[in-house]
Length: 498
Image 1 (cartoon, rainbow, N blue to C red):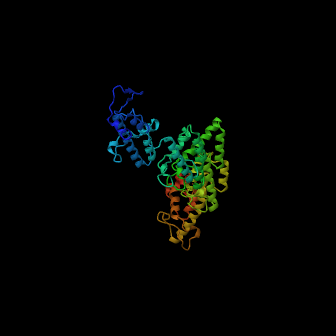
Image 2 (image 1 turned 120 degrees about the vertical axis):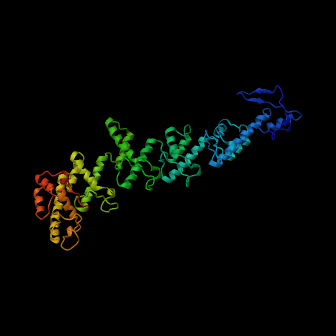
Image 3 (image 1 turned 60 degrees about the vertical axis):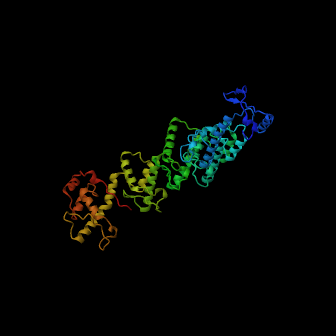
């Protein structure tokens, strides 16, 4: 005021009768200078857009102090955060980054008042110019929309789409623009779809997003996200049999960054349940029908059990084509990177799966479809546990008899207990048939003597073995002769891995 007004105003006194209240409760004091230069002072004050009769020196001084406090806070905020997008509730924190005289200063509310009612800057072009030079954001909504558009453009350039995960946050690194660092882009995209964030009453902004290829339907976005994840899963694992507990890993570079952390197994289960519930209520809309058709086109398995059985039957058929039989050891696992099996079978614990299949088949004949049963029987796979034990017996008993005779000829006799040492393995020496080299003869004879394996509760087989000099414990021999063999004695031994 002292710089803009005439020096005579500095010594002005408030004249009685010149005070009146302004509407709103603000007291305005009209100042009348003394001397012959009153007209000149009025012209000088009016030339800069000020009312010469509204300058109360104590109020002006207080206003200047508040303005300087706001200005200093704005400068410090931009230095710390790089912009002037100040939240409405921001209060200067009490830390070393801020001067102590600014602590607990409500900067956010002051900035809001500057934008809405022109606090401190109304009729003051000089202060407005100062704020513009500092980069003051007069329209917070417009600035945030520009920030979102820049982030979406960069996201599309990196990932090729705008399917932004809800949890995605812009990283503080190149090639992301610095103004977008730390923006929770996934949450903003969700709010644009659900609540028209930044675009309500702004049709021109909606056109900008349309030009970017923005996906407006949250449901359509989730479905497209789900389909892309299924395709990537199939490329990695060779199938779409997603376990219920499967979560897309964060540290696997084969998955796009926007997909990591998604509970894909839960989504697959929800889609299967949705189809079952909709079929019961006969409610299949046009959009849902299109989505189901798209899932059918990529080979989505609507029934998890049928898909698992199909995979297991196909794997058993592949095993038969490689080894010529289906005598699978219960510990056998398809090796990773094997050229004999398709990629979708790598790592499958085939031995354990086929064992559980036989056990479950005994109590649930609907586990397999007639077509699956026909295919398994075509490759010689026995679903009946008893029949499988006979197959194992027919395979091992001749080897045990032949190996025991050769052992007795070479060693002169069996051990004192009437058997063969449990650790004995047929060596690669003269006198032993090539097909027995490496055979665990000691283990097989031990199982046969103490558990009744390979005899199938058959007294004739027991006598055949005893004739070559192998002796059995009385309890085991009695069970076999009486036909009361325990479940452990009649259970099939595990076949050797191929």
